[in-house]
Length: 347
Image 1 (cartoon, rainbow, N blue to C red):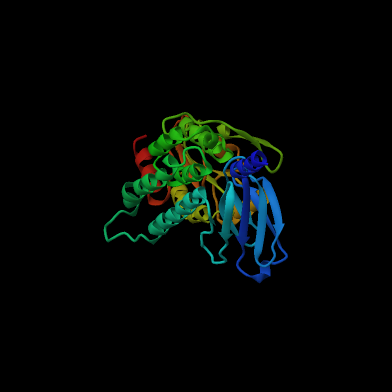
Image 2 (image 1 turned 90 degrees about the vertical axis):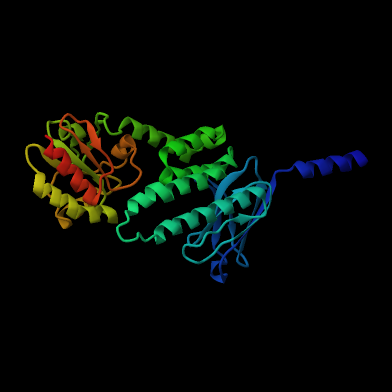
């Protein structure tokens, strides 16, 4: 009996059992379904009906996994691992909701709050008179962001807290330091789908960096006709290529600058090409008319060019030389106008 009791005790101590108790903002959530899903692949691990504002999930966790607890109206994040985890989901817009009760959930909460604080800081920044906002971003805030968020990678080298930190660093961190942190990460982190996508995107960026030759692609447009990028690029003209979408506010905001450049420089030595990505052809066509776009546009390109050129946000504007060499990437606004003037003045 003593041996049996000891065995039961040992089994209980080594169990990977978890209980997640998620509390929703108010009684209007009662009777609705909440879902527990893995962040790295979107798979639904469990579901529960909300009662008394609570949804309870129980199971076995073989390894710690970053998860989302959500219904159609609100959500929160947890690290799913053995133990009793509580999650109070806020109904306030912009609030951060995260799990509590275990070590990795404490790490997750610290990361989420740190990230929010850094983003609030840059959003609230107001440059002094004569100060360059972009210089502050590049030389002050971005290095601070990189070093601060990077500490969550080094403290969690082989779990999903590092995965989330690397996802943030891929968007706002300095490229060299991102690569350093990525190299330190364990295989579990590197094998996660979001990180694998980032690695692929960084490789695409390296292969299409300034000084590299353009990469061709062929798509079937909305009329069923095959269209190749090489029909426009590498034909003896400088070509400014705007990767955009009809639903993208910043893309629309950039159109007056592009129209100004087109009217000033379009001719035998220079032109503009639009490439509509992540968009429905009918929406693209309407936007071409509504926005007064004057240049040709490849329609229905979807993810093909963005995957090829490592683009994870639009608008993304690239200047190609007459032979198809990439001269400059990620051009915007006044800096774009100045770059075009500079390049064309040297031809």
